[in-house]
Image 1: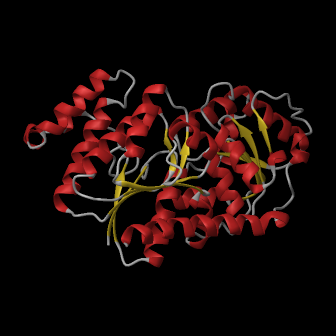
Image 2: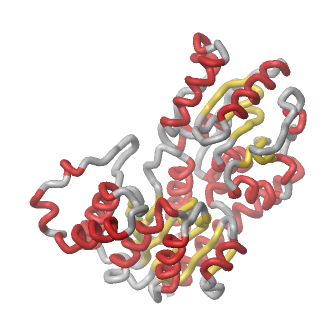
Image 3: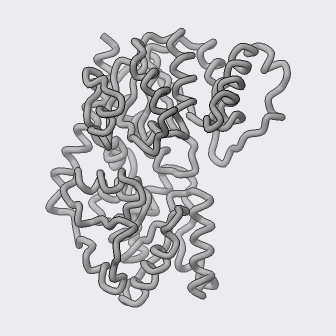
Length: 374
C-alpha cells in the first residue's frame, strides 16, 4: 500500500509536525505501507519560504494547464490561498503523482477545514482523484470559514473519491454545514499518541511553562499572566510552539516587563522540530498556554495545563477531557494574582480518559486505512 500523507508537516507551528509524525509512525507500526510526506504549503523543510523566481521556465512549461487553472482560480477568488504557495504545492504534487501510483491520499489532521486551506484542498483533491480512487481526512478540525470556502469544501466532501472523514472538534457544526453523515465520524487528535514515539524531558526547569502566542487581543493577557506568576513566587519560563511571530511576542513581553536582560534564564530555546517541542513542554510541572497542541502534548504526558480560549478548538479539547474548568475565554475577567491556584496539581483523575482518547484516535486511523484497503 502506498500512501501520500498530507499535512502542515513543516509549519513553524510545530504542533502540526507532531500530528504528521505521530500519524506516520502509527501507520508504520501497523501497516506494510510506503508513506510519502507532502507538506500542504509546499515546503520541503522547516523555515522555507516561497519565491516565484525559483520556478524555472522549463519546470513550469510541463505543467502549463495546472498553472493556468491555478492562476485563474486565484484571480476569480480574491480571498483564496496565496498564489505563490498554491503554485508551489501544485507543482510538487504533480511531480509526486507522475512518479507514484498512490492507493490512499491521507490528510493527517489539524485545523484544515478553514479559509486558509480550503482552495488548496479542493485543488489537491481534484488533481489526486485522477490517480487515486481514495481520499481520506483524518482527525481534522473546523476553523474560521467563509461562505465561499464552505461551498468549495462541500464540493470536496461530496466527491466520490472522498471515502472517509473524521473530525476532532466541532463535529456537530461540521455536520450542520456539510452533511455527509455516512462519511463522517467523531474522533480525537492523534497527537495524543505522541508519548508512544517520543521521550519526555528528564529535567524539570520550572514549575510553570507559559506558552506565548501572536494573536489579536491576547497580548495584555499574556503580560498579566506573567505578572501574576511572578507575584506568586513560583518559578516560570516562557516557551512557544516554534512560530517566529510567537517568538517576537516573547521578546516584546520581556522588554515591556523590564526583564529582557534575563531572557536566557527565562525563555526556553525555540523549538525547531516536533521532538524539541515535546522536550520543551515536558520540561515543566504545569503549563499555562494558548496554542492547542501545547495542551495536547502536555495532557498526553500527564502534565496539567490551563488554557486560554482564543479559538473554540481549545475549549473543545478541555470539554472532551471532562475538565472544562481548566480553560477560560480570553474575554473573561480573571484575577491574575490568584488564578494559578486553579491549575490542577496532576491529571491522575483523567489519565484513563486521556489514554482512551489516544487509543480511539489510533483505532480510527487504522479503521480508515483498512476500510479503504479493502
